[in-house]
Length: 259
Length: 257
Image 1 (cartoon, each protein chain N blue to C red):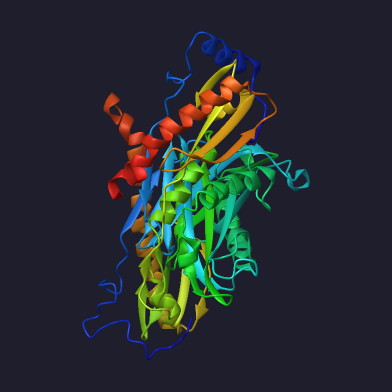
Image 2 (image 1 turned 60 degrees about the horizontal axis):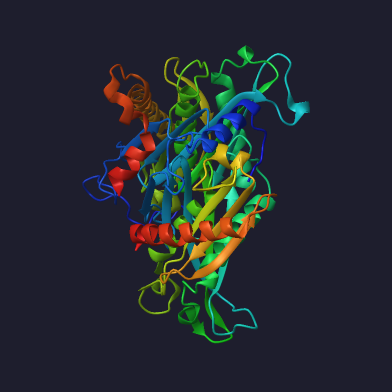
């Protein structure tokens, strides 16, 4: 949060610098089953964010001492690739990615029926290919679809989105400029079916009223993303006739589309 | 790479097919899997590419900064190549610092680009002895089904060719396209049952006795080679592999020309 409210990010008509309204999401694209080696995978684009998630497991838990005799553990690794940001990031984990990995692991552990797979580990790898604010939410959104793609029983699919404050207004799904020069950032992930919050962080400055407004906005957006997650899984699996062969090649599809 | 266990039944199957003149996926000895190259896939990189060879997939990005040249090459830019075998790509990859496999991979890719003088490093000198462009070429393997050398080479070359030098953002005048002199292409073959098979899948790599990567330039001249795995090749087999590499290299070059 730069907190620089002099920077004009919303015009008189309530339109943001990327042309969105305050309660509008960036364009979202979700594809399930995009990698062959992984047990489950997903590719998510939210605005200029591009994120891949892969799931391996349930498989033998390493290191051994982390095994739980009663249930599986969920180990998420969030990572940004070196050229995903404007100044090259040194490859490997840093303090920020360690924290995000921990939060996402904890969130996903709650929705997975871990008691079905004692002593095992379910490993989720999130790689941010291109970053533009909101990568943890995009990563978690992708991870949930990848877990479902891996056929792992879950309480629900988990969507995530960030809400923030820019020019004293509550806005949905911050882009990079809004994240840099905005006044608050509130990433949330939830279980849409029950309305429970799975992940919540905040930095910046929000009044109680603003927080309530932000939360309401975020919950509504989570439901929108939730529908897109389910749609991606349907496109991957709800193929009844033989013509669906091409549909299963999610990423190939996505690649040729953009080429 | 990642010579993990392969079941005896699979090994026998591959061997028997090859003795019979066939490959598991029905390809000819000198036939690649489908190749797909997409450039400019990441806006935050100066140049980038995503490459698929069959089910093997890699993403490569080039980041450029201004820095000091090496003392022995004061008027040349710097190239640094790094490969990450991230655990997303295979159940046999683990997180952590680069292991011998990823170091070999990065160095073979680097050698092909460096030795072919693909990048005109002298044109990446800003102020001799003080300021030159530093190129960070980062390769990430996303999905591993064999033949990483060729996929990574192709990705690296495509990323470099698509790159724009960010001069303006560094206060050094107008942006300009990456100065490129040629297109080095690596073609990898393996030897199984005395047959030379190009573009091995992961299963083929696991049962192969030898591997030979040959990088050629626009004239079909050899620029870099690397033999891997613990077998031995006859001279005849080496010639076959090189012939194949030169011929297929020319075809692949057209894809990214």
